[in-house]
Structures are given as C-alpha cells and as structure tokens.
Amino acid sequence: MDIIELIEPNNQYAEQIWDFRQEILDFDADNDDRFAGCLSLDTASSAEEWIRICQLRKDESTCRETGVEVPSHMFLAVRKSDDRIVGVIDLRHHINHPILGSWGGHCGYSIRPSERGKGYAAEMLRLDILKAREMGIEKMLVTCSENNPASEKTILHNGGVLEKTIEVDGETLKRYWISTFKKMRRFKQQLSEAECYEVLKSTKRGVLSLIGEMGYPYGIPMNHWFCEEDGHIYFHGAKEGHKIEAITSCDKASYCVYDEGFRKEGEWALNIKSVVLRGHIRFVKDEEKARMIGTELVRKFTDDEAYLEHELTHALPRAQCLEFIPVHMSGKLVNES
Image (cartoon, rainbow, N blue to C red; front, side):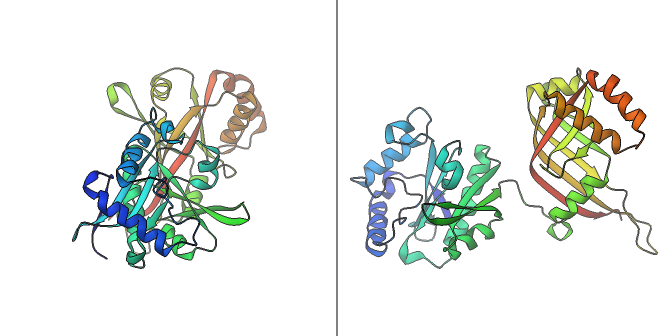
C-alpha cells in the first residue's frame, strides 16, 4: 500500500471528487450504503456544491444549514505518489445524537472501487483516529454490519473493542470503541485488561494526578476502591483544599497504582505491575452512594465492624467522595534492573 494523507475537500480536487462519485455510482449501484462517510455527495449537483457543504458542516453554527445537527469534518484520502483520491472518510465532532450515539458512530468511510483490497480502509481509519485525538475526542464509536467482515477487520486492526451488537432495521450491527490515546511503546510488557483489573483490586493506594495551580501537575497519594461493576475508581478526602479546587477547575485526571512486585529466583530486581488510568473525576453528591464508597474503602483495610460504623457516622459526613471514570487504561510489567 502506498502512503496516503487526509486532506479536506477543496476545489483543487473537484474533478477527481466527481470522478470518485461516478465510479461508486457505476460499481455500487445496488448498495444502499455506497456513500458511507460521504454525506450528500450522492445528492450534490456538483463537486463545488459538495465542497461548500463540507465547509458549512465543520462549524456548529452553520452545519444545520446543510440538514445535520452535529458538526463534522470531511476528508479525502489522497495517495501521495500520484495525488489520486482513493477514499473519503468523515469525523463527527461528537455523537450526542440519537442515531449517531446508537449506530452512526463517529465516522463512516468509502473506498474507491478500483482501489479496494489494498489496505487503504485501515490506514484511513488510523489517520482519522489521529485527527480525532487532535480534536480532543478520547474514544471513537465505530460500527459495522455483522455481515461485513472486511469492515470489521479494519476496525479490529485499529484497536476496536467490541461493546455489543444491536438490531437496526432488521440488520445486526456491531458497536466497537477505539481509544484515541497513543498505544504503549513497549507492547511486549503490556498487561491484559484482566491483569490491570487485578492490580486495581489488589492494591490499596496510588497517586492521583490533577491539573493544579497555574497549570502545574498536582499529584497526591490516595486510598482507592475499584468497583468491578462499573469499572470506576472511588476515593474520599477533605471537602476543601488544593484537590477540590483542581477538580472544580478541570475534571481531567490520571491515577497510577503498582503492586508490591516479585523477585525471580537468584535475582535482586523486583518485577512490578503498574497501571495508569486517564479519565474524568467528579464529586459524588448522592448520600447513599457516598456511604457505599465509604464502606468499601474501610473494608479494604479492616473488618472491624465497630470501626466501620464509627467512620460512617462521624468521619463520612465531613468527607467528600470522588468518582474517577476511566477513558483509557494501560498496564505493564517492569523489571527494576
């Protein structure tokens, strides 16, 4: 596969855009989804009109003029060796919409019929993920039909994690989530999701990092409870102070934990499993939920029921419980030597 780049539609490619459109109309006449990711290209009266529509759709204030409620960027996948359009892919700025949030997802794409089977779809999606990261999109929803193994392969190639299948108009669709965070460089040391969860369950404390005063990182040691049911991390602490001010100012946070490690026979160096999570943190306001968090946190350290009741009665009302919602998790096994 030759190198491609994503370029926003412009008049320099007007003739090629129209040729691309005609090739799909001729080759995919019986495919109702033949213009996936090319919104309005099939109904536009000219390439120039479609380019103008693409420009309007980029902005929240003008996208509704084109009949859509969610702004998006459209990209031409252009082969660098001969400046030829090989595909089109879009990127929706968000999926806070009944259709997009259910089965539309963050993007759709179409490959030129004469350029299919060359690996361009996977590369287009990879480049689209990079664009999403630049926009601050932390994870992308990408869907495909259960009967479209090629599209599913493209998603899996880019790290898609199957959430569930849904039925839409009699068709079974698969919902995949793709993290836009950078992949771990030393992947051979990477822990599985199950191993990461085990570290989170077995450890009692870690370091919570926030964005503090004047933009400086602010890291503090915290006791935590990992809830297997929702995958969230829970803390408690004072109701006032730098931590509360930082969270109020910015809800983005990172949490790092590591286990006690082990030594292989005859070696001095520890082998340590560590997990780093990035996500959003918020205040827990529900009293019943706060009581549950307080209970679980105490029980990580003691089974003394009298002490538990004392803490729930006297300490918890003075504490602020926090909920950390991960959007990305990575773990690795590190040797200290």
